[in-house]
Each structure stands twice: as C-alpha cells, then as structure tokens.
Image (cartoon, rainbow, N blue to C red):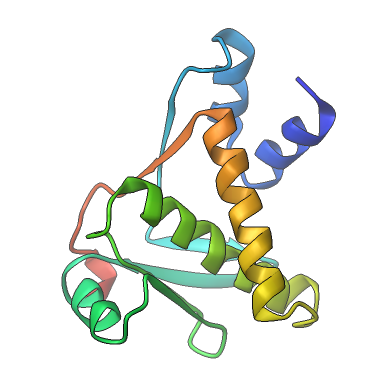
Length: 139
C-alpha cells in the first residue's frame, strides 16, 4: 500500500479500513459507518442525516451543508449512495479548510478537493453507511 493511502486512512481513523486493505484485494468493499459526531482538529461536529435534514436541504436544493459556528454538518441521504459519499467528502473538506487552512480555499477548490476525496474513497472500495436515517441528534 502506498504510504499516502496508509497515512490518509489512519488520519481519518479508518484503522479497520487499513487492516482490511492489508488482508483483502483492492476491489473489496469496506463499509464504514458514518458517526453522528465527528472531530476535526479539536472541534466536535454533529452530523445530521435523513428525515427533516433531507426535507430542509432539498428545499434549498443542497445535498449537504457545513456550519463551523454551530459545528454541524448536514447530509441528504435521499439521493443515493454515490451522491451521499460525494456530499460527505465535500462537507468534510469545508471543515478541514476552516480548521486547518483558515478558510484559504475557495468554493471551487473545495468542490475539486471533495471530488478527489470521493474518487479516492471509491478507488479504495470505501462505502459509507448511515445506520439510522433519522439521526438521533436531529430531534
């Protein structure tokens, strides 16, 4: 495994994905549950999915949102797996940009970086799953 891929997986806490990579062939699928809470650089973000989140995002024609002030990420789950993974990569890129790059990237750069992460996830066979469509945090 290239060091960059190994480092990426370990950085995002995907230790199980890394171990799975070491044991299985490259095209195997690794299912990673998306947590309701995720940390970026000491900040704890709530992640909201499904139900009211889908309705609110669809009304604004978005597939996801990131708010550093509220430390929330919202992801629509009603558009299919590929679109959801792309939205996750995009919104996580916003959080990384805000915390680690002081907001230096423009929206177009975030879009391109998020697409790159999405492609990397696909190449690695990483599939994100949301166990409960109506997030416990969303109430």
